[in-house]
Length: 261
Image (tube, rainbow, N blue to C red; front, side, top):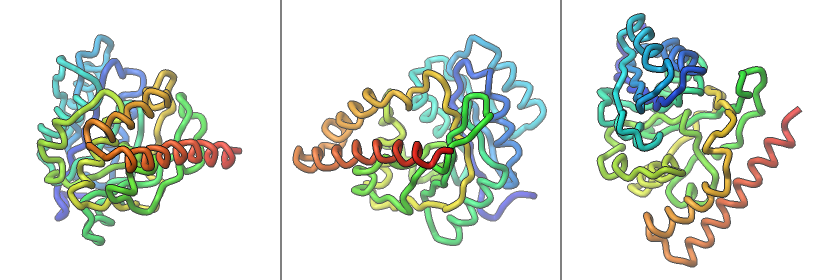
């Protein structure tokens, strides 16, 4: 498949001591049927073999590019660095321990072009650390605007494709150490954008030991801080949306547990 009329995709991949799963993640991007892409692996000063693995992938495929980010301040900072280096019309996000199905980008870009969408996400499943089993599809709403996302545990970052011009400097420079992806999406949606679901299962989120996203208490605290300090939502509305978000987070876990074999 040659260059697409839809334009190139920049895949931004934060990396820090990620040698265990890094090659699988990079190759899932390289294996996309939508081939007009660059894969930006943003390395935060890894002390394992990650950089050598990226170099080997880059030697095999010039679309892979290592970006040094030795002044690493977490995955949000790495994503910010990657987006600034992105040359594509579209930006997609993939962590160094997650994977995409081969037709993920082709399906998603076709949907966005057909529907005139500038921000989309897909269904995905969680998988065990060793990839031996997967969860049911993670529950997801068909669309999110700013207010709807405030009240729901929402979008899987590994599934997002967003048009590059939506990631303006005021968005990508506003990075946090927790719930940073939610904050970015809220900043984009606050401009009047609606995020649209591509209703297909196209990615796998690896449920690794010690994953930041598994520790719910700091995440909920970070969400409250975003609503109060970063978005300046008045107390009554803040309490309403925060309670809705917390309840939806619990319900999502319950639904996944009940649906699991």
